[in-house]
Image (tube, rainbow, N blue to C red; front, side):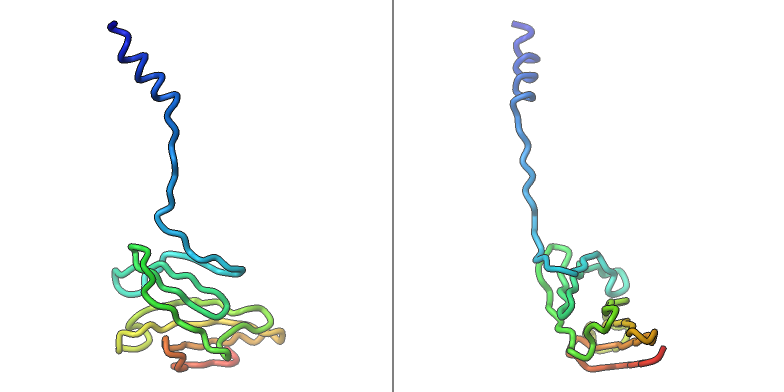
Length: 127
């Protein structure tokens, strides 16, 4: 009788199965990048970007906003990369701004800073 509890726990432990449930899944597409980004001083967000959109998620995995990348900010021969996305860094109105870097086949680096509404804040075609 004194071995009943240890034997019962051992048998229960052998027969128990664990299940992993995901808290949230994110839409995945070809070329999508996903990461945790500090968008303001001490404010962190999950950011997923594809060729034509930037999706910003809160830390509780709720979608905060979707930012469309304008056609003239999209890829060139070697692609376009979002270098930085931030609030209140490029503008003071509290909207998001992002820095895009791209390169073409001639070796020119192109930098552009956009507001979230698609307005170009800065552009350098041969940087």
